[in-house]
Image 1: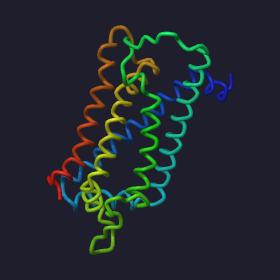
Image 2: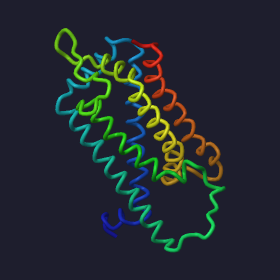
Image 3: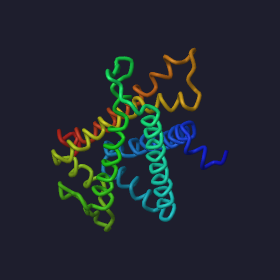
Image 4: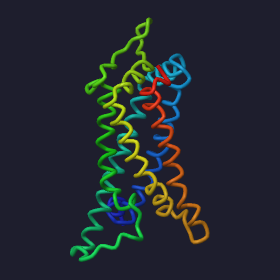
Length: 225
């Protein structure tokens, strides 16, 4: 069986979705840790942002890898959903969702919402195309971008903060099931460790929820200025 045929199979698509999921989860964690430096003050966050920008072509390679990973994750998820629907051409007369959690049942919807938010996030902080707070383009005395001011002023805008808070909730809902699911797909889950593996997703989701919500809420309440 060729690689292309394998990737189009249910097993191959699920494996690809799990592997790309790991890469994206690691990015989410790293992105959060980097952004949490906003609590260390403007000098620290601006230094972090300028260090990333100084990577030059390397930064664009990283972005391209992440974009490719995201596209592959979405594509594999679409293949899995299509095969699942094809395997069940006649809808159940009565759905029994009691054994399946809400996060699992809404993976498709939450995934679409997260994908749309990523586009919004890029248009907000990367290009400044959507900037309801008018915070994009803040400059330091030396002419560099004042990322700290952009972040704080952006999150001081109630509607912008609300968008990020809601997106974070949906993201963490997606992760709470997705992380545990990918562990099972890759064969890390068995009868002896099932209860422990099943907790990894929800626990990680809660940590990311607290970390990502802390920034817009801190800006709204004046904790960071």
